[in-house]
Length: 159
Image 1: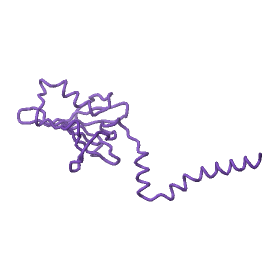
Image 2: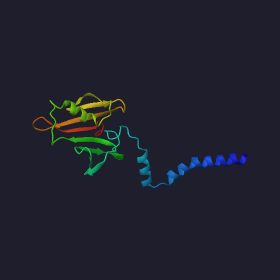
Image 3: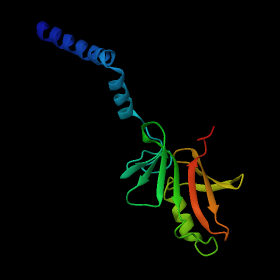
Image 4: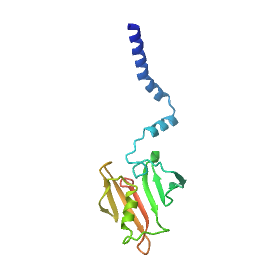
């Protein structure tokens, strides 16, 4: 009985030591892979602050969505989305007629609880209580006053 208990304690001790040994023996590349797997994404998948998981094709420094061809993503470390850029140059949005559609395009890339809390330098600021983060929304317009781009970014992206 004592022998079995000692063996159990020995195995338990080894199992507690083994993870430290494994981490100590991993290469830099393996540590990077482990860090990526452990990365905690604040936002929901495919939203600003979240992890990019949509089918995309790399286009320069941006990722172009294969399904939503008018959408490009700028990502940071571990594919955390910093900026979403929606391109409406082929079919500009009229702010007087398309307000509901514009609101939906903005909301698609933020947490569902995000609400507009103000404006700063001509950009709208939204806040999500769920993740306690702010978003900056910029609308770029053509000479007719129609929206050609909607850019949703992390409020802290330039801080």
